[in-house]
Image (spheres, rainbow, N blue to C red):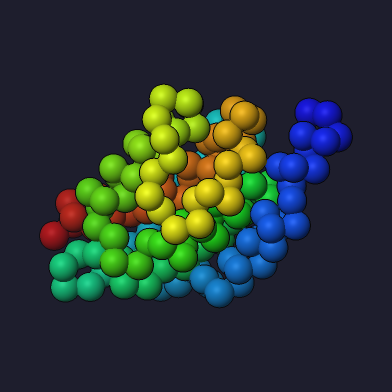
Length: 146
């Protein structure tokens, strides 16, 4: 990656998002948890959630070990995930994967446009998808445990 591409990818806005993760501490006692790991870069997202009566995300916590883009994606995920169902998370993950692959427009998720500079960097795509993958696994596992 050349210097100008790196500068646009790791913008102050992207770097600032990582700070937001402090607002979402992991809930160690939560029974609804999952971890997602990138095979390409080694990034890890550990997620805990509590669910409301409709089986939608009521609260969440994150522990993220990733590059700034992966951390930014986790913060973007966290801000928009409250109230989402397992099916909604799964659908959004599929839509984001298609967007990152250049197969569709950016899906409707709050602040996702902040990750536009990462689209031409396929090495970052899996890290971007990790929070949605972890949430999908946690929510479907919780549904199976009913």
